[in-house]
Image 1 (tube, rainbow, N blue to C red):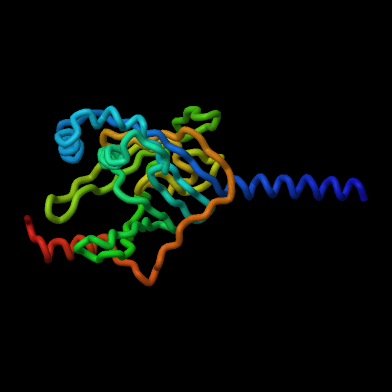
Image 2: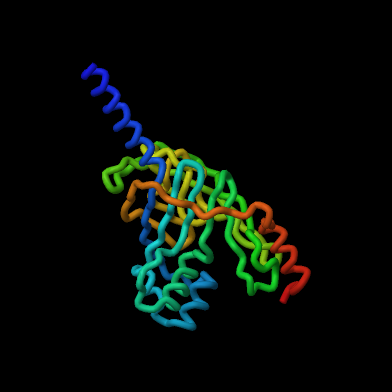
Amino acid sequence: MKTKNFTLLILCFYFSICTSQNGGIATYTVSVVENEDDFMQQQMKEAIPDILDYVADLRFQLFFNEDESYFILEDKLYKSQIVADASSLVVKYTNPSIKVGDKKYHKSSKNRNVFPGKWVSSEINNDWEITQETKQINNYTVYKAIGRYTKGNSRVGYKKMKATAWFCPELPLPHGPLDFGGLPGLIFELNFENVTYGIEKIEFKVVEIPKVDFENVVTSKAVEKKFEELYGNQ
């Protein structure tokens, strides 16, 4: 009887570890390389000349469970929240976003002229070529994947871009920063354009992911079309 109880205890302990690792918070640091061809970066530098110096202070958090994730600028005391928000634009972050399946959702501002208060959906980048190249990050073995995604809109045109991700099969969760995910492991490091997100720490715990109001969703293509109708080529 004691042996059975001990075995049951071990099984319960193992199950609790596996369950806890299906949820948690990954914290990312971010860095950026100055690029004169990056329109957003140059616009922000005109407003705040030393804005790139503030990027290192940013922290982003990815709340995740087995099926969903929530990516957001960490709620902490920054030297200046206005500068932190501006710096986040330089590293391609615009809104808190929720990933469910192969789609990403963000909530449109209630003050916006186009679809105010609506949830906007877009496709997650899943076009990856997985390689056998590995390295160690935070004592985890991560694998390199090369991704391709489309940048732009109908007004300025579209172009194909490349991203590099290092993902961890030991944590088989298809999540990552921003619009990137769909790999057979949590993304520990992401490099695209002139920006690099790198995992700083992971805390395994039960987390709450905000709920998307699926009755109140429009697609990013519908938003783009509405902008064209209202503003044309302005």
